[in-house]
Image (cartoon, rainbow, N blue to C red; front, side, top):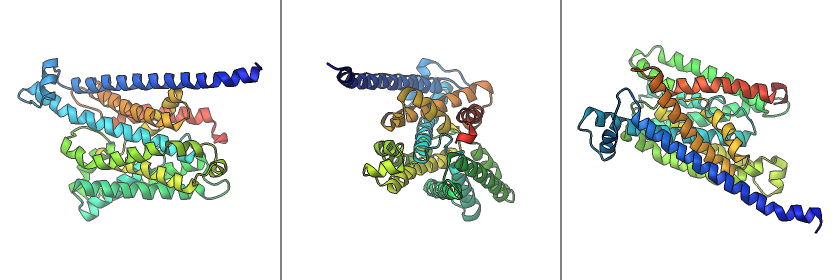
Length: 347
């Protein structure tokens, strides 16, 4: 048998071992997520025991401890959903744009959703949960299109550096517009400022329920786009040669990311850097195959946001730090590291 034939014969075995290793890492990540969820229910301003947790999970809230746990359960669920949505959206944006710096916050998508909601509250008096969600999704989509168009101008088209700069400039501009809209409205300023930080505190199942269909649709469309994102990673010409409709593939995957970002921003406020940090860490375990990368990113995003929420409760007791502050403290240095590692001139 020739060396070439031996190598080809061992290839299926190597692929099988890689898949089993990825599956093992995925199971370990899911187990770690379960542990973080348990810690999120158990840790807070008030110490609780296992009996309080068991009673609260059974629907009881007769004691202070049980009531405390009952308040943490929807908060934990919201952190899981929001983190998974943002991690998944970040992986999709990086795949669609082939940009290692892509992130809902850096590309201005979160701030577009935020500005749309603020304008809706200040000028149209929107109040219902569905109005918030539709307005945020519209703002996220408009911001994504605006940034991509601006980043595509000039020589070379939409390069990673141009998209990152266009997104950063757009985020700053939208943030200034939010302040300009809120300043004359003292009646809404307090609530808007608290929401603008980004957090999961005060979550209730009544607040979560309206956003579930939008997140579910975003998750389904995103996961179904995995194979097509693998084709896009080969380059537009090669993807087209393989029979992919490049523009349609990009639009569908981007729609999933916009849906996830807009719905999450509507219920939590703009939370940055989760979509930047998580996909890069997920690639260390899953590689670049989006069929594995997307589930890893969803679990990793949920874990990161849960961990950030837990840390925020511990470091400022008896007060709390919102998750938006904690993720910014983690994500900003990571962003700088990514820029230095990629070398800006080569982006």
